Image (cartoon, rainbow, N blue to C red; front, side, top):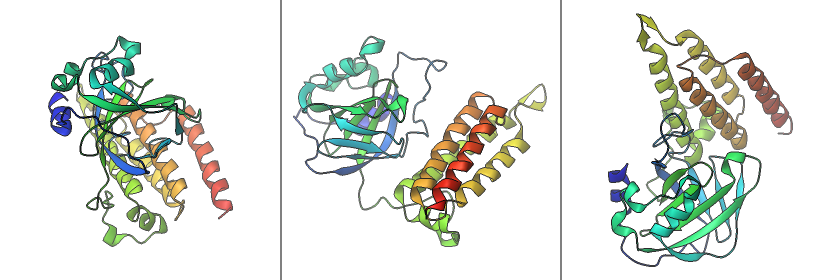
Length: 281
């Protein structure tokens, strides 16, 4: 983690600013508060729920396809050293030092920091804070998640590349995914997480698989049908990907076990949401 962050930033001791106009970024590294251990943290290093997500930062707003929550700037931007920003950002866990993230050489570098208050549609994304770095890079943290995101600007080389071949896309949902950087990145993330959960389920204990491989396959097939039922409606597709990613993360914690009765009830509610959403289109 330290090497990744150090090589990703490499910024000089300059005062840097947030963009005056709205700008798009991609999350290209997810670092976990080093005070947390694997059993406590709901997220992990380069967590697929956050890696690859699109973030848009404007003069007074911050939004991301990782959540439906929208964030509004809470006050003006302020100049602060990186060391003080990290200490403030992770204050609830005793404050972190730049050296813990491999950034000790930049402890006294000034950054342009801004705090955001987010709506309550997703409690896990309640408060956000950013620090503008060099080369257009930005650090972003949700204070109640104890994670640090490294953002890089979206550029002309960033094109939609989902896990499937777009040249073979024929369903409206597939074509919509192939036209969206956000949805294509989500598709790759979900595909990678599904492969990881299958690997967990296939691992053996006492000569037997730990998880239900047939159940996982059936669950994924059913989800793909729900996803494809969204057709060309991007907001429906985005919700489908978020829901599936969270379900897979839960499956991973359960050792590749398939959904519980409560999970299936929640999936039925999702189906009702999709149906209601599509009626108006």
